[in-house]
Amino acid sequence: MIMTARYIPYTLKFKRPSGTSRGIMHTKETYFIVLKQGEKIGLGECGVLWGLSPDPQSDYVQKIAHVCQNINLGLEVLLQDLDAYPSIRIGLMTAFDSLNAQRPMHLYPSEFTRGTQGGIGPGMSINGLIWMGDFSFMNTQIRERLSEGFRCLKLKIGAQDFDQEWNLIRRLRAEYGPDDLEIRVDANGAFDRDTALEKLKKLSDLELHSIEQPIAVKQWDEMAQLVQESPLDIALDEELIGLPSSEQKQQMLSQIKPDYIILKPSLIGGFDNSDQWINWAENLGIGWWVTSALESNVGLNAIAQYTATKAISMPQGLGTGSLYLNNIPAPLRVQNAKLYYDLNQSWSFNSLNL
Image (tube, rainbow, N blue to C red; front, side, top):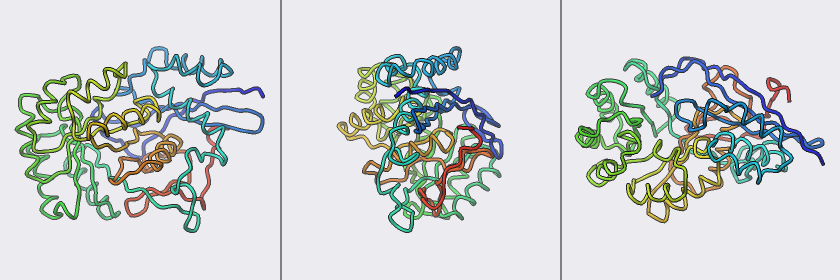
């Protein structure tokens, strides 16, 4: 049966401007790939994040159009030309998985999606994200996340004065000990390599869980030394993005030997690549968790369902779907710091005109 494909550009609008290491974001563009075969429809999201995604921006839309125009070449053939376009790669793979799903948008069945308790499966523990901003804004977010039941927070640091950031965390730790609240921080490569170790030692006094990417990427010798000398566990994030070959990926892991790696499937090319990273990491005794990257609910759903098929034991870095004014309505919800798939709710694709 003939398959057709098209793509839909979509602008996600933040409820409030959100500060990241790439500046203040008011909107975020994304693209959906829609497959049709008879009565069946498949939907996948190309969750590109300019400034961090390695996808070439100059011909990005042309590449999605080429994929859709040549969809009957089949998934395996099309993927051969998408190594440099990880967000298109995951969008295409998810669209095919969606097309072949037993139920709409049930991509990777597990207890998470089966609705075993009144239409709701077991929830997945997630961290509460604290966006960058002035200290009053960050403190307000911390109070909101704590009132929502989060006992694992991830704070973005490195954009403000380090001593002020340290004092904010110190005050938080004075109220909540490490048994009551897990604190992760993410420097997004902001620390200078000459002063990074001193800062890591000071942060370790606050009994944090870990720090993501303390120094900028592609400083493997320096990062490896930090991992060896730091009293605070180090997780790699951006370091995983844009490495062109399996050999380089494995070399990076073997050389740096971080305590954790953080997987963003939209930025590393999908779930098969995520599986590769997990296998390499576990063979080296490296921990891991999965993080979304500002996708809509379509992409978040795929990432959450994939993650739920794994033997996970720590809070994951998955979004909550609540960032945007015009997100795609989905049966995903957050309660008491857990992400749930609620079969009592339904998807709505009216804004996409499928």
